[in-house]
Image (cartoon, rainbow, N blue to C red; front, side):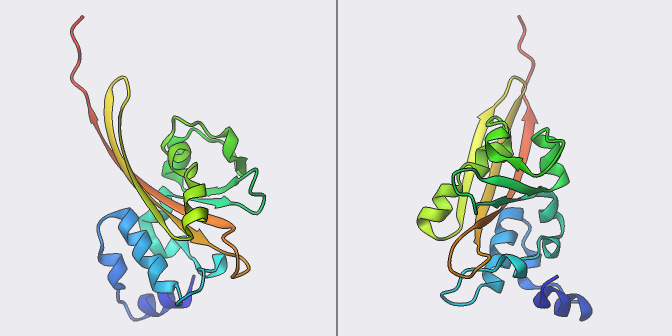
Length: 165
């Protein structure tokens, strides 16, 4: 756990970012709270557990082998949604039809922009309309290069009315 989260928890306080209702916004505000001017956020300073329920909707990509990104952490909600059974797993092996696959494949946008990327998707399956939003946060293990990305995805779905044949 990072120092900021320890201080707030020991004082019985919730930081401002923790009051935000939207998961992706809460994750972005937390990332901004531990970022120092002009520096990349260090992987070892980033604590998904400080984000409470965001960690259940979160995932971590290891980009140290940039031509073969690895999904090294997936929260239980996304693990089930993507139908994954073991980690780590190559991003290439994650279904492109899953929310995890949709968002994780935008990691190149984080590298090119050198900043967080937010996105919203609205799509329809055979029986559901799904609205999802997420954020991808750049992280660094050496302070110089973005070599990890942490993502948070939330969604809501609505069952479509049955179509009479």
